[in-house]
Length: 358
Length: 270
Image 1 (cartoon, rainbow over the protein chains, first blue to last red):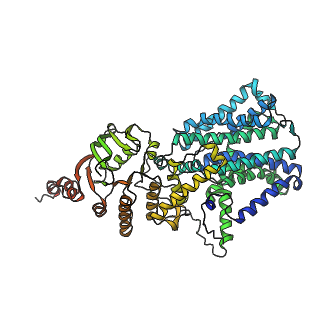
Image 2 (cartoon, rainbow over the protein chains, first blue to last red):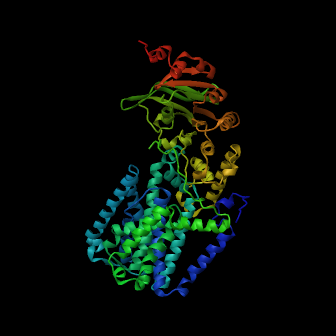
Image 3 (cartoon, chains in turn orange, blue):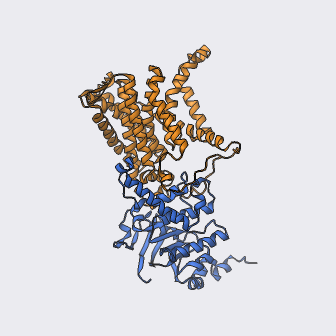
């Protein structure tokens, strides 16, 4: 058991709260840096996907997990970022500038979508973002002069002012650097007043407002940042896949993204990446065990969808805090050993919510 | 002492066919504890919601002696109220449940934050200094209300009585000039109510904050209030010192019913 004796405000603010953080995150960085040596080319590509989806997950986590606004059309932002990147790099714009443009354009679209969020909540916001997703997917398919329509569009390699990321390893490092920067940006944001305003809006709009938080501004801001991160993820996705077509950004993709943050654990930065590992890792795991399954199950169409659905239901029922919540319990168990009590994480029924002025 | 900090003139608010507040006028003087009392449904909380701009009055105005001169409160957007120095608590606690006590208090410092988005993303030294400053202020309030023990506890795991204090603490963190307390003692036991009475007096005397509160517990009201406004059915019944108001026949009637009411309830024996 570790007791942190706080003698300084900096201890509350700094990122690594104690030596354990320094050690484990340091180890993670070393492993990630050494991944090209340790992993095969195929696994490295999967790890790259995890990083890309992790970035998108960060964005959705900020929106759904921290601000409490659910978007069922997030693939649209991913698509806007991907197509922006594809179009601009196709015109010969260097990668960093195209990436910034992809983020900005996605953020702008996010603001437009965020505007209805000021008026609708919960399921209605879900429907609004869902239909927005359909509109954008349709736009990708119809706007043939720019997107190539359903025939698709191929994307070039990453070109950073003359340096070309022409191998899986070099592109992996591009993604790694961007993922680390995005994560740091999110963590920084969450430990300042903007991040606290997001959490305040999630937990109680009425008292957030009476504490001086401008609801419209912060909700729109959350949408914009979330969309920008999805746009960055989309841009990297474009370079990774090297070929874009509208059906990559359909409702299934949106639901996958939402699934990712819910399973990862709403309201935690870790959750975004844990969810990405789950989302990318599960198909691999399924195909790995396929050989050992009876023919009728292994070859059944929709096996993946069934497993995804079952896992999601299991998480909602038994572990609403997702993989990260589960990890916290395991960690607490180990820290407190042998003093862990069974009911320690029993959810408290919150009372007196009925009278909210909403 | 005599300058008025907040002045409501002829306030009325109508929800459909219900006239929740009808032509209510009052002044809150700087440095006093002003209490609204009245039976359930009298419109006390509605008056609070008018001041914090959750509702817009159908008629009437609220003027406030702001830090930079007089301000017509009824023209201000709701999120602006806190930065004018008006903080409030809620009758049914409205804390940020999935956050720690300290986190809640820091949200109270929101209006004092001057950093922009970009500097926050990079967490510049200026932002770090501002964060430390915010924590110092929050720590002062924690010290004032004896919340040290709960600093890093999640709200969801706190008992009701402590949540009530945390809400008061969060309001104090905004460094208000006017504090609106909506039933500060509801759901508290006798000891906790006594503590609350001491704190309200301390808030008035030590911090020099004007308090406007809604309260049902008459012993608390008479202990801390300078003046009391009694309301019933959205209208003003009486205003004055706690003793005057408690002795007012209209107030007694509102709470206990008149002699005629009682006789009408009597069963006629044929």
